[in-house]
Image (tube, one colour):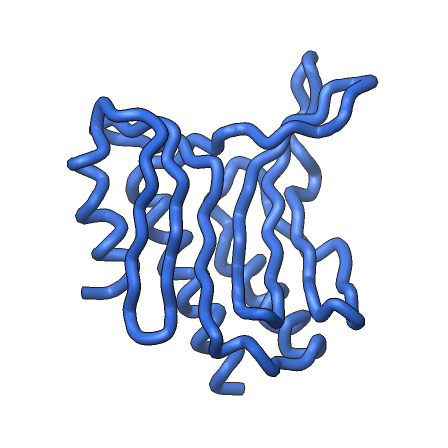
Length: 162
């Protein structure tokens, strides 16, 4: 079974439960997902991370190219994602909603990190005026969660093959 299939197969068992964790592993790749709630159609998550040792020695230029490719794939979230910063020393690329979702009580945005140490991680944040940002749950349909897992997996695959 693929990472996507493994994660999606766990969702029916999560319905009506709160604060659960899912994991899926295929070869050197593991997906971890921190689930807040789940129903028949949607899931709210605090974190989605794909970890792999395959990115342990990748160079920043490859991560930058991979982040652009990932942003081109992930066009189905509430806001478009764009690379915003690269740290050559830490070998990390940060992507974020561009522009963020603006509401009367603040801004909401996705943030994705692609790290050489071996991970692709997604979180959602809320930033209210005059306060520090807070991690919030992202609401995704089951299909969107599956697509994210697949797109993270394909990004790693493309990065190690180029």
